[in-house]
Length: 425
Image (cartoon, rainbow, N blue to C red; front, side, top):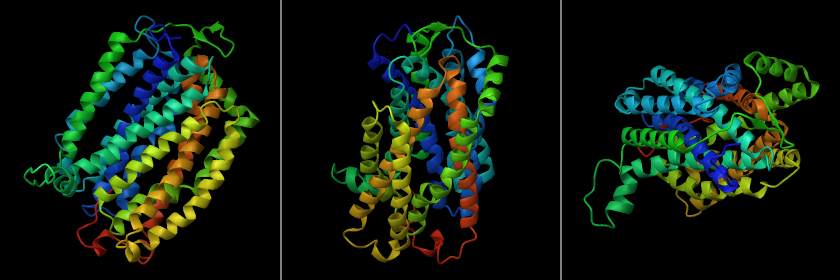
């Protein structure tokens, strides 16, 4: 256990903040394609940039290193969290000086490479935090690992997407902030993308400094019975993965994880991008996403004490597939109804319900993973299970985005077919 954290509340807060950092970088990565749309990016460009998320699908390769190699004096998780997060802060700070130029000139390949490395660091940090969460909550309530991850990542993604896009918009800030306070209009929002990235780098640096100063760890790990056990060596950790993959139940889980995203990726990856190409301004989508996010945060709290996460997963998966049907129809008819008074309220309801179910499904899934993970190799065990989920989404999403580039223009409209109101969420 982490001796510095004496209460469950402090443990939850620690893990929550670390997951917020993940959500922040992932939210920024997921938002960039929507920014690129305003500069003429095609579906093929967006499919190319989607490779930036692939490190999350292959982090199992280096996860055993995170669990087995560390400084006993510095701390098992701190040994990796501190250098990783310092690297993230440094890269983001350097990127902030060039990102505007890269976006304007559609340097898709270069941006993809940079964000692959950023997501690689984020994925590595995720291994550490997953392991820390298993250590903290395995003897009490493993579902808190899922709740902390889902809420933290949701808040972080909100900051890296909706918050950024809302206050980066000159139209929004001039109309709703500067004008009411009798301030002169400006050609930019409260901050630019490059300024936001610098602020994000500073935030990561502050959190990392607090980790160095205040987090104290014990080397021993407690199992589900509260008994302390020794950590496994690097070889033993890799062998444990091989033994897991040979189990029939894990093989069945692998099949489910790889096939389940087939019915989900189109709605999950193309909804906001399609709304942008259908003429919805990015600041409007950012505002729409605010109530959607607030509702989404409640999803993991509903099942934080459940002992049947798989039942919740199966039910929410089916509901998500059903909820995608009206959303697809709504996106298709957007050009005809966007000027009506009911368009945005109904859009909020549809997206909120869809995201709520998606988050509920994810929280139930991670809760199940946490409940069966071995604390001694918590980071690796969780990484193996989550990697199966991420790999399924990554493979199918890239295929979907590339296929979308070849669909008839009557089905996938280009942003050039609208006026200059096309932005991103």
